[in-house]
Structures are given as structure tokens and as C-alpha cells.
Length: 312
Image (cartoon, rainbow, N blue to C red; front, side, top):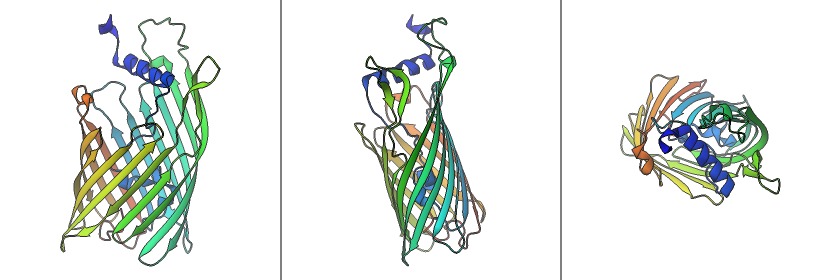
């Protein structure tokens, strides 16, 4: 009976159906506070905050929906002393239904200071571990011969590249987080080809700082995400920076959600952020929104917090 089918089982059926039909969609996790989590996708962001910078972010998507995405990230990056070179390291853990992904990136960026503008080019090497946890599938038939009930693991090497341009009142970013389109051989077709594949993603983003007086600054931002044969997605954001300490604003994500975010500079070292997403699709009937918490730490910078608008 349909009433006996659990949400994890439905999620599993949906994922396998999508893979079998060859439908493509965005496979990388999304973030509402992407402007403070840029190293995850763009290695050229390394060293852009002019000191050792660390960011931890936790995202719980579609709260109340069983098997919904859960993502945790950690990144750190810093310029090398008396050099144009910058290094970064980032880690991502992402879980959706019975699939689980870990990614470790080591980034290098070369930054050129042109006075009012800085430009950086970066590369990162990446190792991904993907797991299919069939033991968590909770099927109706516990002896279904089509399921192995064993954990399936894939180790996938990859590389990514990016460009980052910033000045006192703007930034522009272009990134391809993974250039290789690894096959995901969880299942195979009749001609022995994998039914799933990691697709190349393109991320383009930018932001401005518009002074409105001594204590207020407007910060419009935009993010464009593209995957071949999948709907394009835009994040259009508007933030208000108050006394160079509190940033509040909202985002509209096309065909997905309307979001609110706030970030507060607690001290010279610490900044804290929170975002809440309201679903605008049919999923709003089965979830109570998405939550995102960010903690940032900056060490060794001459200009702290939001006092210099260059630091996004």
C-alpha cells in the first residue's frame, strides 16, 4: 500500500528515476550566505581577506522533510607573507537521502595588486568520496534482491579553477569547481555504461558596496549557477550594512526560495551569520524552511570586520 512507503524510500526512487532518465540538475550544494563561503567553489578567493580567515557553515535544508539535504563546510585561507601567492583548504560534507559526499580541496591562488583593483587566478586539487548507503534505504521488501544492502563507495579525483577580481567597492567571481565529469557507476545500463555522471558546474557572482551616508551602505549581490541541460538558477540579493557592523538583507532564488540573512561582527576576530529560506515551490507544503548558520574568524588582518567594504 502507498501509505507504507516512507519518505526515504520515495527519495531513493526519485533519485534512481532521475539517473535512469538522464535528467541533469545542479549536483553541488547551495548556500544562501555564499558571499562568505566562496572558497568552497572558487580557489582564486584564497587570501582575499588579507589574513588567515576561517569559515564554518552548517545548512539544514527543507526542515521536516525526511532525507532532505544536510551540509557542513569548513574553509581556511591566507596569503603567504611577502608574496603574491595564497593558499587555501576547504572541506564539504553533504548528505541527501541515502547518498553522502565528502570533498577535500587544496587551493592555490596568485594575486596581482593593480592599485584600486586586485585580480587573482586560482586552481585547486580535489578528492571526493561518494557513498550510496543502501542499508538506509528502508525498502518495503527487506529481502529485495535488487539491493545489496552494503555501502557503495566511490573515490573521485578532480580539479577546479577560478578568477576573482575585487576592489574597495565591488567583487567579481567566476569559477568551475570541478572540470572533470566523473562517471558515477552506482548502476549501469544495458550497454554497460554508467547511468549517472558528475556534471561540470559554472558559478558567476558579483557584488557592489554603495555608500548611503556615514552609517549605511547598500550591498547588492548576484549569483548565477549553470549546469548543462539543467535550468539556470539566479540568486539576487540585497543587503544593508549598518555602522559597518550589522549586515541584514534578503535573497530571491529563482524557482526555489525567498531568503532572509543577517551577519553581525561580534568582535575584531569573530563574525556570526544566519539565513532562513522560505520555499516558493510545492515543497513548501512538506517542509518548514531551510536554516543556515555561519561562523567566521579572521586573524592577522590590518582592517578588521566590515570597516573596509572590500571584504565580502
